[in-house]
Length: 599
Image (cartoon, rainbow, N blue to C red; front, side):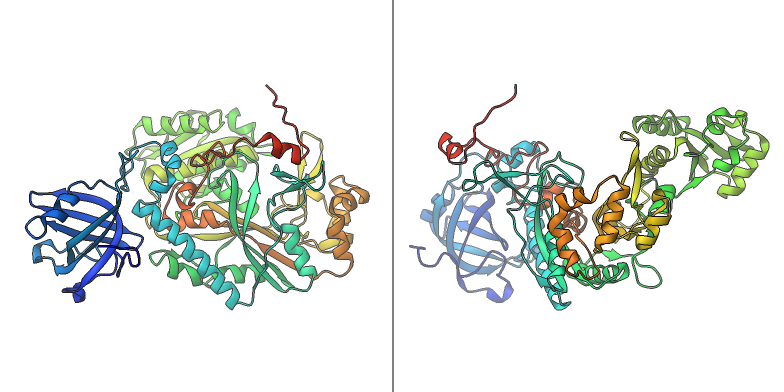
């Protein structure tokens, strides 16, 4: 039988009980096979699903003999009759579980040799092998579904954004190198010897220029490139973001647009996920300083109620020097209350102390509230009034344990934040794994003190609009100025940074002046932006949620590589094609380049 013009009449996810009696053609990969003597059962898989095929020696011995030679992942074409499964063999977990196909013909397109690993969701081989044979890895059901989910999310994002009046506009991939931000990927120019393009770290300046060009609402699912080491939640080299910019908007307008996007698409792409909202139906807003003080991090997981408390005031005149010495300006004493510690062994507290030391702490003090009062290694150093103040300030009840951190404010916040996350992990405090706890982190400082250079520097994004505008820049302590800068966080993962842009040349020159840049410096580095703003720029702002991180959350994957079709490893290598690779000498000559490797 020839299959040249029609390999299949149906896919392996199509056939149901209503198709019994039909003669069909199917094509796909041999997922697995069972030979029980005279009968061979083959699970045939394609993109759409799996169908069970029966090869019966009594029905057609020639086809049966051919089926005996099959190996997993071989590509085959079959023809046969759809029959009902007997009642005890119906598989309700399969879309095609009510039927099977009794094969009358078989063509083997290619017999596959021994596989480097078995195509199942429980892969026992190393990630390096998986990435080298990624085309096989992608056949696994879970990973295959993740990539389909990626396609669906992008489709839903486009649908929603276009319906909301946004225009999809593509910005250049070959652009110019910028001294700001991460390290660029450079592309040598053949036509302009000695000159280089740069791959965009983000379309930031282009999308702002689009606002200056009169486009009111822009979006793009944009590829971004940064030559930096791998980080949690980001693949090295390249990533994708849902890039958005809007004209004539304030911060709340951006928030409403983004909240509408996620409320709309989440039920369509991840129906089990539930978004937590405030009483007003919004994502919670948390000020930057509050996030650090209460959660120890500016990307908090708010799915569990475990907040850090400041107890610095209690120890202003304490005889316990470890705490008292950290009540001066810029230092603090923080406490974290953990319920249900009455039966915890000393090893639990020691384990948390060791973990805090791994995070850079000198130690982690603790108390345990028992029937006869607060007990622990530091209890004997504290006055009775201090112990009573702790009970009141922290609302302690019998059975509570209290961990303490003391030191420089930011360092202590971060260490206590790490301890908070570790306790949540050990105590399994996230009860609903399908909860999506989005929140906005707002009121970032525009400036910070750069200790290495001994000067005021930009804290996050130098192009964010200062709250209060030019007047604040002229009259206020720079370290007290807040920016219209915000982050979108979900379940402890930072999805995006954004801001209302500084579109006024006078305000921009002043902000850069405070950070030590002259007017000439600004004109030289950002002349095209200043020129655009001088010709009339609307107030504008935007955001760019990371697509890969969003997919990690929707797919419940701990690694970003599980939601990318062909990801790089931690060393920025794509092992399947051995990228990066060597190039021919002639190519280098055409680009006017000569390689000199430092050894």
